[in-house]
Image 1: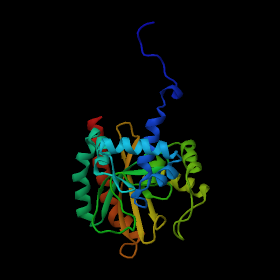
Image 2: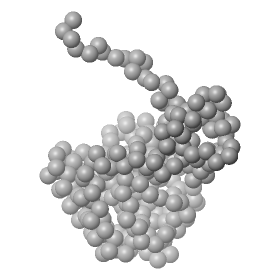
Image 3: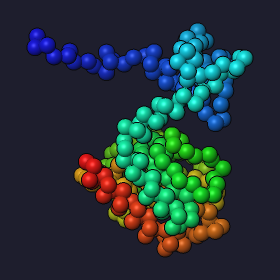
Image 4: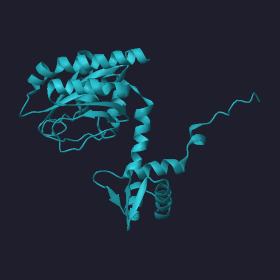
Length: 262
């Protein structure tokens, strides 16, 4: 033996209790901000005894609070997301650039990364509330029907895009939602060539969003940056004319920051 750590297969390395704990945390949402023990067990597929052990452990650590028979997450859970953001100081540098973009276009701007079949918001600078969905860092939306998602998908090869589309729950959210996988593949390929994406009221009625990529030094797409507006105030054509140039300029500045830091 040379003293090196023994090779661990995925099965050896998988800690089931930890995975179950994460499933309990993820079970809470805006639709289910608090739950009983039975509801947590049903939402996670755990036994009542298993769910109880995990909830009590999370409560002892300060991540869960009990109010009668109801359990809810506490603000301490934000520490987990902050650990990601603080481990990537780049986002601290990105915020003033996004604030300047919002001041210029007078619309909200967000940055997100790809995680599985979803985009995850890592930074958001809002203006007016234009969505019925409440968004902030850590929020998730499907990649296939969002402009940032299509930008992020455009950075993958065709096989990876196909895999994500196969695993995505694709269903109409509005009358304008594109739901044919072949057409979605075509749209992603178009974004790959064009370098930006626009989604017109596919995610939610009245919402138009335009996005551009933030790239690492290698050219790989790290994140997507968007500007969102209301269709009754700004048409898709006006979005492209008015917002695309400052959006791309901001994305290019963020890409340059990435190149300097990598």
